[in-house]
Image 1 (spheres, rainbow, N blue to C red):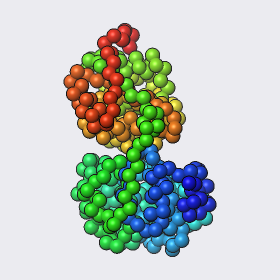
Image 2: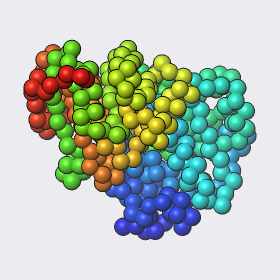
Image 3: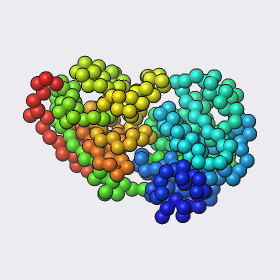
Image 4: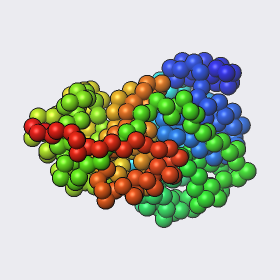
Length: 373
């Protein structure tokens, strides 16, 4: 099946840049075009964003433009980075349409006054819940005209503690609307908002899973830092994403890497939005070879052909482990996922493997000579 078979306009298909839809897109696009509610469950990187944006823009292009400060479509996302990414994809797709449609993204960490000015007319609004509520309290916009609501990475929003904010926003939306919920896992709290939804669940196939080669090393806590530097230098890794469990750990790892001559950048929730963008840009461009990150980047961020992910520390949730390693092995490009496991983390790592349904080889890191690292 091609995009042309999905009754999308040729200009949208051309702007998309792909000829064949992914599994989630094949099933979601027709349902969205029909105005149905959709529950789409698929791993990050499966094409969910284009899966809802393409049919939404197709429908919007056939309607009147939005009224003053009354968006027709609202996309809620959990992080600033995902808001930025969805907005970028939306603008790219709109570039292929001969249409006056406009999209905007609003999130914290930047001037709210500038965002208020940009909301004069917007058809599709991408927003994080907190900043959207701030704007609503300042009467910068109204949600009374929203005909389509999208919850992207909805399960992550609940994990980050947005449930009360989301429920407050849902109460402000029209009861009669189309609701699209796209997530990595189902959420009963948000699924209750759907009316006779088309349920789409895309399982990872064996070929996709084999693109990620997983391996783990047993190391003591004091050898973790030198071992990380050994992996990067000895393995001549040119682009590696290193996950840590806290902002404090991130600061420490970044400091040790730079002191040992490894170019690195950091990204976590306590940084300014400008700082987070600079770190991502430096990593994308190859200016730095290592990006140290908390689970802020475990979902929704697309880094094409990333060769390696290292779990310097394990996440609390097995689901977050899956999303972390899912940053590599994308777009048919193989990748490697390495985990450093201390004796205290072994039991938790066994739980992660059980939940994942896959055994990861655990090698003895004590045999590696770390002198000079």
